[in-house]
Length: 223
Image 1 (cartoon, rainbow, N blue to C red):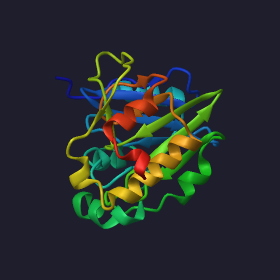
Image 2: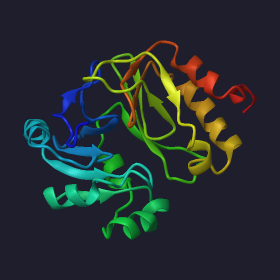
Image 3: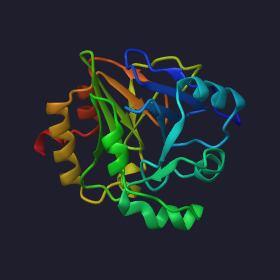
């Protein structure tokens, strides 16, 4: 089992996104308007290969905890990139500070720095602060999710075709299932994904991702 993350590699067909893995976990470098990057969900075990690849992509300006549970690498990354701002959904600031001893800003500055076609999407009806990056670029739509969905096991950055439910997500993630499903249904109508980049598992590229989501949540159409 790997103990450090891999080098960052471009996400296919998604300019501005670069991703690295450690076993089944993922950290993504999101290119910003300034030419700097945000590290989405820092994963512990920052390797020399990862740092060298980041040097070629851009200076790290933000470390982003996209929910209250993805905090394992924050202390290590904050020490490695001391000039980077730490951002997180405000509802999770106390939890994150209690676990890391670090101070966090909100997401406004990061949101305003994203490239055209990318945005942050905080999911309604959840209690873990889960916030995604949604990218609409060159006719493709990617959802970078956190714990709501997973992918096939990572194997050398190979692309998968199937998403997976996180079986414990309804317990630790959801606050109001109906509100969450209504938001999910609206997103499927406005930002229909054919790519999903999960923090857990392989990149999924498939035209039937919306149908797979509906299979995970059979009551989605009732939302």
